[in-house]
Length: 56
Image (cartoon, rainbow, N blue to C red):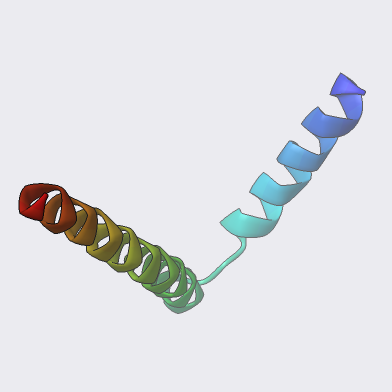
């Protein structure tokens, strides 16, 4: 099982190292956009919870 996981990790590392700089930048931007949306949603939920707690 570990051998399979290690093989996949090595294979993915080889794939990622073959990306050109522009491809790497686009991939990074897409990843950050997804993270930013999730962070904003979580931030709004936490802010709303704090406001509700302060009102009570």
